[in-house]
Length: 214
Image 1 (cartoon, one colour):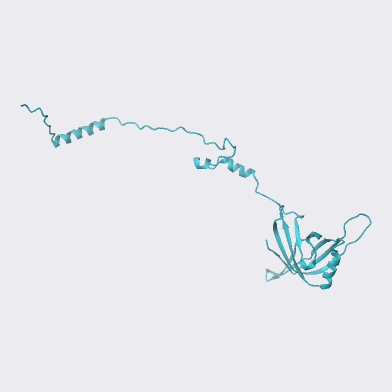
Image 2 (cartoon, rainbow, N blue to C red):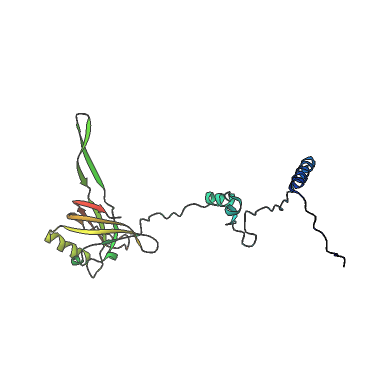
């Protein structure tokens, strides 16, 4: 019987090393393989949303730059501005006076004068004088404002009241607390046959101090 099994050919280690060295030499002699760079197609990031027309909110996130449309929009749009109006105010007198706020037709905001003296080249504040404030009233037949003002004059008591400025929705945006007022004068106004205007009264008070709460 002939043994047909294949014989294993054993390669000695020195031969393996020689083969590896020769392969390395051949690899070094080969030209370098050029790097293949796959460029992704570039798309322009739109400054605005084509559906709404508004500035693209993702522009800064995608490009790392601020959207110039947003900066331009900030320059065009002014900050919200609502001035205080001279006809949006309300005076709240003490309830015991019995004078409703709607009876008042005009008033002054508080004003003051500061006095100084010179002391060895330094200007020192000596005192603060609050100036008189006028309150203008309508004088209806009933309840008569003139009668209520006469009662206040006879009592001769000091009082405090609030002056509030309002926004277009009626919210108080400025509030004064005018303290320890005394009545300086009352003018029951003049009368005439020339026109049918409203009868009014003007009371001038002298406050001891005034505090702007907000």
